[in-house]
Every structure is written in structure tokens, then in C-alpha cells.
Image (cartoon, rainbow, N blue to C red; front, side, top):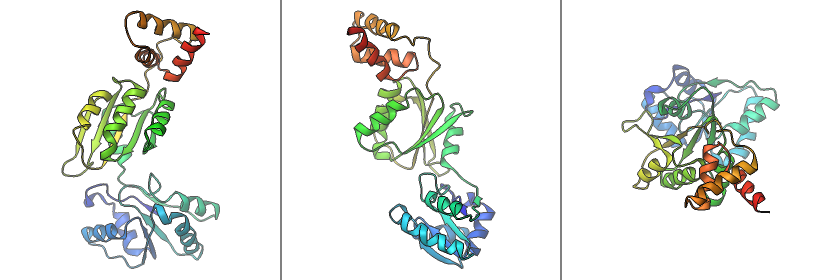
Length: 273
């Protein structure tokens, strides 16, 4: 069983999670200390064996937990917050259980992804979850460049000390005016949703932000119509004649036409050959 744990307030725990914590023969917890605090807050006493199950031991522990399942014992997986398997341990065990023909059950509940998505005020009809952006600047820039033309609303997780750099990189890749929302400390006392263009949010975050962060970014706008490489190169050239630096001109044309900057850059190079 994969049990969704509260992302902030213990009272958001479902009755099914409470019952499973009390009855499961084996409880695999991302942090056993956090589990003890949660059960204390819920007034629940675990009766089964509690084992740690986190990123560093997930591969080895999944094999051990599968043996428990094959022996007929239920295993409850819980993470520090939210649903196991979503940027948290759980995926490997699910894959192993499915391959072995063991039933997998989910106890649904709180999710930072969907909570932030709805709170953001951005379109919710189509969205994608991108997890944590790469930590290294170069890798992050490449990942974001690949998402520049993504039309769906995008949801990310990010550490507070990297938020300003990530927002600045997103402003560069997606355009300074792309709408976004920084959702902080969801369901907790100091819950906050800061909405605005990426460049504005990057400037705000540079002053320092604390807490758990979920970042929601609007999808790429519908293309304005320019797709021909010659037309794209001409649009860049027209901006350069008006005094706009080439790098900025390429970024502007890419944003206005819902295209990756690399595609516009290649068009400019091809026009000069």
C-alpha cells in the first residue's frame, strides 16, 4: 500500500491512512523519526515492523520489501509528505510488485502537486509534473530549453536556496513575462502563493525565501504563426536594426512564436550561410 501523508497539517491524514498505520505488518517510512511524530499527532500506535525506506537505500530495501509481500504480508509505504513515488521513494517497489503479480493499492490523500496547481490560478485542464530541476546551471538550462515550447502548465519542486536561480533560468528559457506562481508552505500556518511574471518572481526570490516550495509555470502560448526559418531570421534582423541585441532579439522572437530559442538561433545561422 502506498499511503499519502499530510503535506503540512496532520489532520489532513485520511481515515484509511490512520487505519493502515495501526494495522500494517510492515511500515516502510522515508524518515522513521517523522513517522513517529506523525503517529503521535494522529494518536495512532503502529503494531507492525517499521523500517527505513529512503533514496539511498531504496534499491536494496525494495527487494527486501518485495519478499515481505510475496510472503503474504502487507507493506505500507509512507514518505515525509505527499504520495510515495512522486519525487519520493516508492516507484521501484511498485515496479517490482507489479512484475511479481502483487496487488498495489493507493491510499489517496494530500498532494503538493495538485494543491499548488489549483492554487496557482494557471490553467489546470492540462498539466505536467517535472519534479526538481537539475541543480547544475548548465544541465538546468538545457532541461528548461527543452520545455520552452511545452503548452501544458508545468509543476516543479525546488529547494528554497535554489529558487531564485531557477526562476531566473526559467525567465531566460521561457521569457521574462511567462506567468508563474510560487506556492510555499502549503497547508501550513505560513502558506503563501506568490503569483506574477517569472522575472518579477525571480527578483522577489533573490531576497530570500524559506519553506517547502512548489513552483507552477504557465505553458507556452499558442504560436503567433512564424515557423519558416527565413521568416524567423528576418524577424530577428528587424529587431537588431532597432537596436535590440541579437541574443535578446532571438529570445523575443522565440517567445512570441512559442518556439525554443535554439530553433530561432539555428534559423539565424542558416540565413547567414
